[in-house]
Length: 377
Image (cartoon, rainbow, N blue to C red):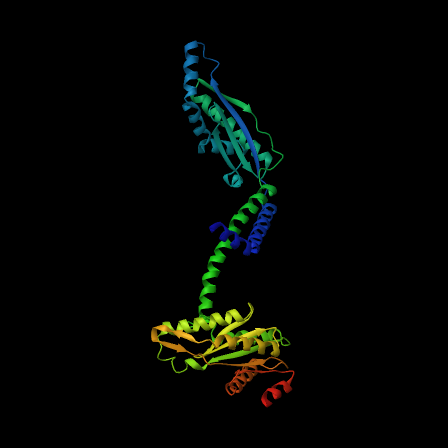
């Protein structure tokens, strides 16, 4: 269930994921084209017993010491020292400011007596010269201090042809992967933020007593629909429950909520999924019927009236409540305003109160004679 919920969040936030990946890709490609190419030059040295050792036992002891890596690690520290760097700059006739864009590092190749000098910088020729000079200066320094071991070149650095960075393809792949991960996180986060905000906004649109939309929201909804589609087909209706007018202030809140729940359940049952229900006042509801002309609305309201004619049993009070419903409706047309439409529905409700058998009255826009026939009846 949790996985399905997250998949739904990701599906709704697909555009966030796509945009994040796109921004990451553009950023990676932009950085690759802007960045200065960096070249890496590598020289290797090998540490071995000195050829001047004649005694076999001295050679064996020297090799045994090399196996412990202490000698190689010491030489590695020498190669990384400031002294070697200073001597290298002097040998190449350079100033410290000339190598600000360069980095170098000496390291021991794992489980061996081989040392590696790596220099990275924008000029491949200077990088290789620095790697070889650092190695040469290290050889000179070690040979003066130690006659037991010999340090010599294993590989001489040559100017590299291909830069080690930037690598657009690699950077793009990494950027897309990071964009995917970050985009998924943002999509989930946006949904988790949106849902509480949606619920918070919804709470201000819901009537606490009945659980349907309040009057302010429904009026605004009608106004929005008419502003967006001024030639739409629509009807509204006001459903008044005169039978509870005398009990609204005397019945407990929980009992009133149960009564209103029965009413809203009936309305939901008789209406379609795209119809909107709201509370009009203390004893009235209002419904908006999109794509419904007056004749069809009249039939719907008659069905609602028949369903609401069933008495409501308030057993705890030994009381059977007759809701005494009256329904006044109005058909939209001629581009009238929302206030005019609600005024017509209110006038229709006044007409419905005067009808005893089926207190349902709908004002139609296109066939005024129908209203006249009803009046004659």
